[in-house]
Length: 315
Image 1 (cartoon, rainbow, N blue to C red):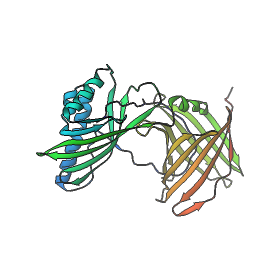
Image 2: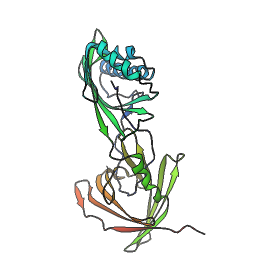
Image 3: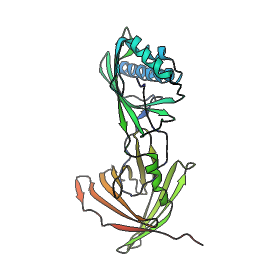
Image 4: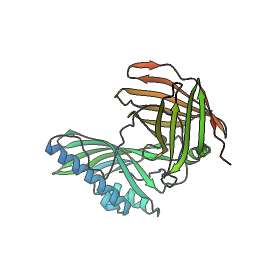
């Protein structure tokens, strides 16, 4: 499967902006045993393919080129992320021998995004590959597609194609948001929003807790976790509200700051979406706005731009 893989390490990133939206489905790691609910025979086939993926990772991490190549059919095809094609087990084994000869101690982890049977003897797998520690250069990951076939009762890889995907956000870009750590407040039309950013999980994530007090005295609160998602190659946020709503946001840099595309669900099950914008003014103030908002089939008006200010540290 993966050979010349360039990928990123786990890193910390921060972002802001809250929208009542739901967490997207996360793909299963290769060690996971979950599979679609199908017939007993189909479940057995899917489990065998997943076991083959585990065997590939083990062989790769042990630098066993022969064991890696044995997972292909005799005339199997492999196209690496540079577009170079290798046909047959001998050619595939030779390519891995040369790759392992580079002396890298990096270990491979793959994530299966989808795995489906096309027939009783054919299946397609799509996923992503991560090598740790990552090489120097632009961070990213390798997407792969595998066509599996059953030969004499055994599942083997007939065709594998890798595609390199660069991440739009680097570790340096993500670290730029460290200035958000601390307490913040905003007041708009009699409503008051208070939030605090702090490091959690030994500095691997940022937790944002917030409370909004409305003009009538009622309050709402929630929690947001922010960090780098290594399997997707982006800054991501996960939001949870007191009403049972939850959300995921995918963040990207732009000329004026950050933009997050949010999708999710309210506590009563209505689908939501929004695009949140963050524009830094200085170390003690930023502007936040939410646009393109929907709840169910209803479009909502864009929010006003809100200036959020840092609360001075107590002396």
